[in-house]
Image (cartoon, rainbow, N blue to C red; front, side, top):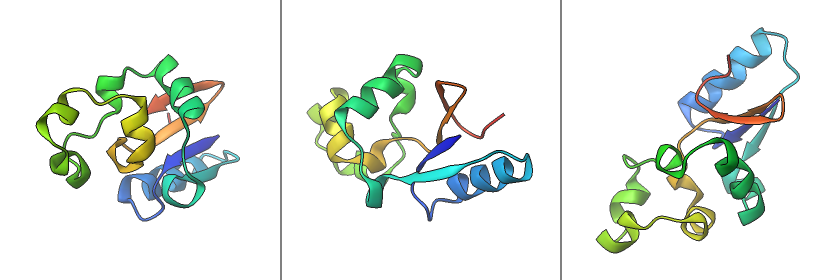
Length: 101
């Protein structure tokens, strides 16, 4: 299992803890230190709709101009990974959003 997010995010830490307590072999992919590219985003978007993936409550989102906010695409998410809701979980060859089940 891979949990994608930011290591100091409370939800990501909770997801890591929950997965470890469930006995999962889990690792963290930190968007800030490990980065994110278009190919990974495309894989995520195969399972998660882009409208669900965008964190519209984030400071980063609020700092975008109105046009960019209405047209967030893969390139914007790659440039500003903190726009991605967290955690994104990769388990059993699928991406899901939220705590692992």
